[in-house]
Amino acid sequence: MPKEALREIAGLSEEFQQAPEAIEARIVVLLALHRWSAAATQARKLCRLLPHFPTGFIHLAYCQHEKGHTERARETLLNGPPALRKESTYFYNLACYDAVLGDLSSARLNLARCIHLDRRFIEFAKGDPDLSALHSELT
Image 1 (cartoon, rainbow, N blue to C red):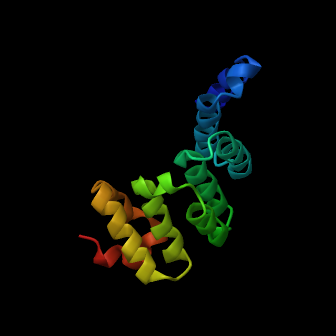
Image 2 (tube, one colour):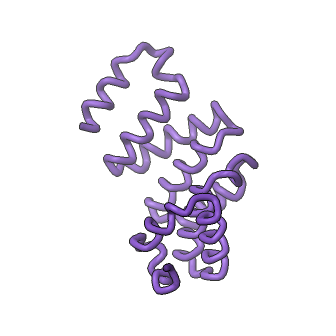
Image 3 (cartoon, one colour):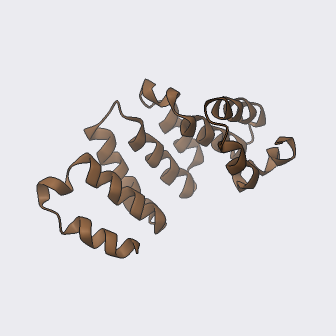
């Protein structure tokens, strides 16, 4: 029911629509709809509102990657706030971007960092087409 969710968010007062929580909710719904450009616009807004908070940067990079701008996505993460480096998703997404860009050595390193932080990601990695070059190495 993502379209209904967008309508609900649009029905909030302007003040609440501009709150970081509402922006993030809108991003999540737009991602579910594969509306990468609209989600990226909202993610940029979240990055401006919360420049030290990792979520906006992770969402923005993901949208860039989905739009075929994987190098830009990688740069978005690498140039994001230091708090990103505490997030398993940061390392997972870097691993994906590195693999897509052909840097399997860096992809392995970032995936290992991710799994060290959260072992559940190994299951995601096994089915992720971005990491297909590493699937045979995952146990």
